[in-house]
Image 1 (spheres, one colour):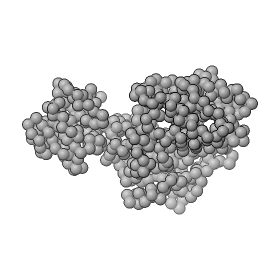
Image 2: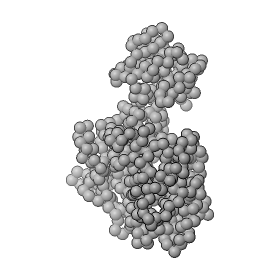
Image 3: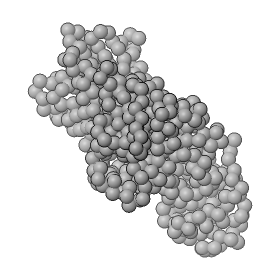
Image 4: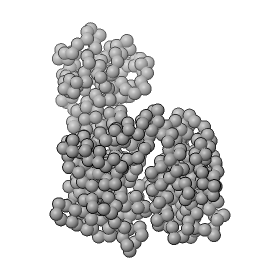
Length: 518
């Protein structure tokens, strides 16, 4: 059922844009003006908003953004377009009222929130950013808040969306377009949700997808170089600066105590006038997780609440990994900051979470384990291999890494992935992973060139299914050793971007299970 806000009109929209100094002028077939009051239909409710010309219907307001082609507007008047919001005049293509703005993405975020009745004000909104661990932390935090609120926590993540507390739907972007975000927030509120946990990417601030949104709790997990390319962030400074914007747009901050540039982030929080809760693995933070001496895969969490400390009963995650125990500390800190008492049993909900494609462990016999994980840059690969050595080091594992990386962006990942594993992985198998317009073999050769360990074996195997099969076959040929095969980069993704188009792929975990005969 379509949502209608009877108070959202052209007049209210223009007044909102004026307050935020975004309006340039209003263009009509008769005149250019700043005065909307006497324009046709100015006080009539606008029934629908969209950024897709294919969804225009009678009375629609259209946002013209991104890689928009003017010819998309040809014939649009016959569909009933009422007004468009754009950075350029399109009166040569349509007789609809043109609301010309300085920044259409900022305008779309503000107007979308208004159209959907400011649903963020009816939710406790948590925003999570960082280079790695966002998705896992979001799932863990949602589990706690869902348990605490009897199933009333929504989720926006790079893997799944959840608008009713229990139904998981596939997502397309780490942080949705603002119009989609506010539409889904409204749906979540109408479904009775009280909390929302969402991942916030650097691009969300780069292109103003969360403009005007204030998070009740923001979490800054960690930072390291990533997404640096001509089409993403030109430098690490730009990447980091974009991520830092979440702090000034929040009411409270949860911060990794061991995060690089920690002091600068504390300065950001002080400048914004917000309180900081820190989390860590070991140390003196307000929320600390420590490895359980009686269980190598377990941990014990302590929450310091002023002068009072609460130590929770020992827990163990379904997703192995010391870095996931750090993510659990972050999730516990987030939930506590969002109002969950330190002593609440809801904190234990982290134990039953499995994020698709994150540390997904598949057994292939006594001497073979395969992990499917989304690790796709230096820090995530290093953390993954660190964990394999921590848990299985006593068994002297033979580690095989199956990896490719994206074409046309984040070029630094090619060396970073190898560097994170170098000296500890005995066999590298390079393969395809979203090559886009590049030759995947050329990407693989470049990655292969970074393997400087003379003892390491390297192979290039295409397509990806064959690379996974080759890794498992090689491991079985070394059955005298304990083998760990790490299939990384895609996580739960079921497509590859080739020549600009998504090509279906059955998924790493499906391939692994098929090859293992499950």
